[in-house]
Amino acid sequence: MAQYNGTKLKLLQNGTALDDLIDITMVADAEMIEVTNKDSNSWAEFLPGKKNVTISGSADLDSTSVLPASDIFSKISAGTSVSIIFYHSVTGQKSYTGTGYYKKFQQKGGTEDRMTIEFEIQMTGTVTQTSTT
Image 1 (tube, helix red, strand yellow):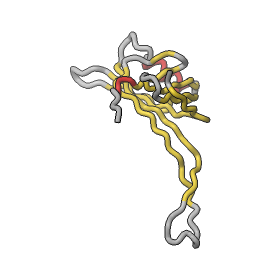
Image 2 (cartoon, one colour):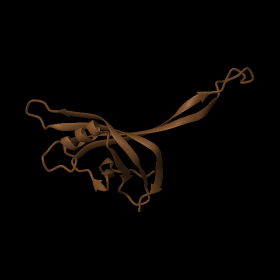
Image 3 (tube, rainbow, N blue to C red):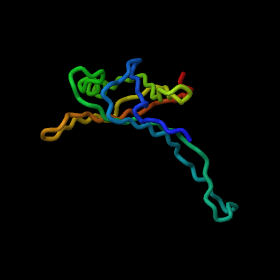
Image 4 (cartoon, rainbow, N blue to C red):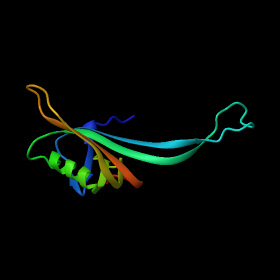
């Protein structure tokens, strides 16, 4: 089985690669609708319901970053959507494209430690999966 370096996971916001990322995570899940009935032979039965994708991560906070803290706060405050591409930069891997809204923004830093931001994006509507070229 092939092993991949996590550094190859990337994120584009409105066509621009976000730099200074420390980590990035995409979670896709589906709600399950229980349809168990008396004929289920004591086994729970389910059908898939609504699907949901969130993307979260953290990045170094510096003045030259493509993802300045003020930009995320402004997008949350205004309710501005962003075009998102979450991808693996190795040819043949998958990329995920859609529209989302920032729903979380946090700045933090400790004594004698680097300042970082944390963010979460709630995707809305269909998220499309394609192969990375």
